[in-house]
Length: 235
Ligand code: 13P
Image 1 (spheres, rainbow, N blue to C red):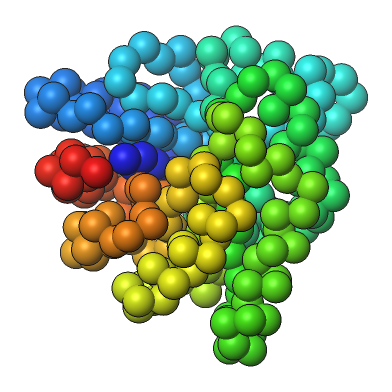
Image 2: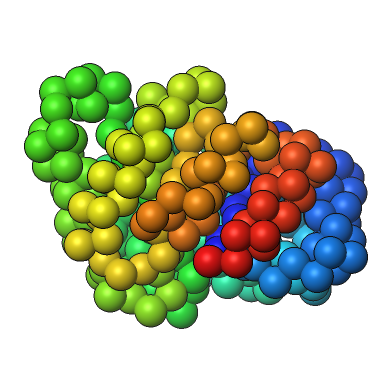
């Protein structure tokens, strides 16, 4: 299974280093063989060797160039980063990235062979419009994306469940994942208010190949427990 921590705009470089060390020690000590990803803030990237795969939360689709405030491939390469999150709801809805921009980013990093964790998910008003409308909305987020890309992982993260403590019912997660699996056979993660208290249940669901965790992952101990749950399930 895949257990991923999106640290977002949290933790300093020093704290991130400590965090990664703590998780890494835990994984070794407990012989965790699951795929574990950590996405630190860009300024906290470091060279890392170990079980954890460190990825970037974002990057511009360019090797380098005049893109003030952005980083490109050259800056990721320096830290051996070959994994990237694309399409996270905070980038779509707060930063305002369009589907066209995401497709460009996707293709750029795909051509460089990156592992791409591509995020999809609907806001509350779309969810409230019913299952069909919701799937229509999510389907648009697949437009232009190569669903057969061998290094693709998809994360379903309902916008209204992110950082709110709200989650869809387990039946809803199963139903949505079933639909999404028809679009791509890539591993499919669930994200949105995954906590130590619900991770075991979510990880065990049909069609869930892992979790993408935000706030709860900020506590190394909690994140480690989730890795342990995934290991015990051995899916
Ligand atoms: P929370 O776990 O804080 O809801 O965030 C989920 C998320 O956005 C992971 O990418």
